[in-house]
Image (cartoon, rainbow over all chains, first blue to last red; front, side, top):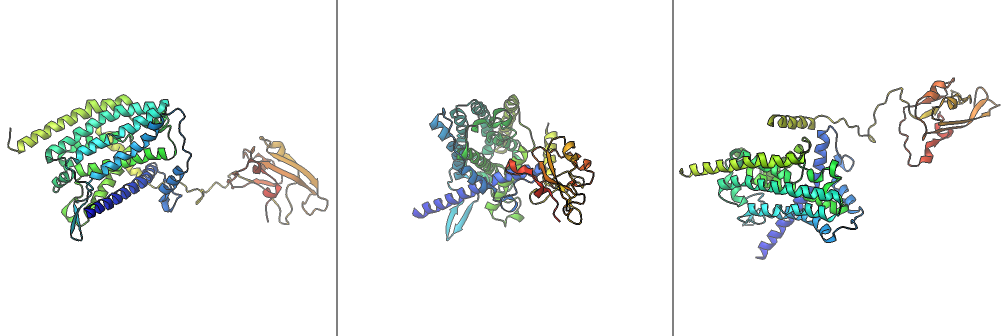
Length: 335
Length: 138
């Protein structure tokens, strides 16, 4: 019993550390990728090639003056940044970065919690994120955050639906909500080959839920100053930022589990490289893809955003579900 | 609809590997043209005598009124070959527009503009530069 608790605590610490490191260096990666895409260099001063920039940013944010808007709703004002970070960290608990490892004759599962409804848990917990933005927008008692929060609520609801629908195809094929079983199913063929539409819709919905360009309407700088985090400064602002990057990592990780074969190597020749490394490589690839998208496409107009979701993506995902259902029925012995 | 999106992604990915045009300024400096108009220099001749003879043409021609000049006699001809030098020669870099008229107007080529463009100062008062700074050191 004690050993099991100790193992879980160690796993928690390692996973949390890895996530926070990726989040910190994600901000650097974003700036570097942005720089190079625009033929610049990005941060260079702190450390070799700017590698210590996240540290410098952290120190700066910690020592900045923490401004509280005087007529804000204090409880919600302090609660919102916390809610921004927590869901991402909670989802971390169900992500299987590998199958099992054996240490001292003991078989240790590489995910913190192997729950059989991991996917539902992910969908449930990640939809908490909208509260952070809505409450953050409301509590600041300022018009720009409020507008950002409103936009975000509508956007989040629409795309949350898509996220759920895109996942259904995978669940129908695998017949399980457990992320480990979904990964096991992909041992020979990754699911994005069988479910390309679902993969594309998942990625679009994930980017839209993260409020990243081209769906970054809740924080549209040119219209809403800073959107929902206009009234936040110092570490509270940093929490929103951390939440965004942690959510990016976590969404990439879930997409890896669902569509990119989790910890399995692309071919058997490459399976000498351990699973967790493959997993992280795939997560980084998707993370890079999100950065790449951000620095390529301009922002959607609000009606385009809603129209795109309800008129195009929703019917496509419904057709995808129907098609998948048909295939499943035909495979299992016809109608 | 999909085609242009992919084309856009391809363009940005291509730029990712192009060499950046950034000049890492404090570490590496841009080559400027030989005729660059930067900080002024009051020239001296081989014997260390100042070329400026206080004719006042630079002060008169300066469109920004950035130059203040006041002369004095040099009867011993140790500091000048014509017996007159500028006692005060100030250029106010808060006003100077680097047009180079002063250098053009100067009949003896005593004032020239160098390629030194790093003129920023943390205090405004320091931008008023006197002869000690401007005089060429030999």
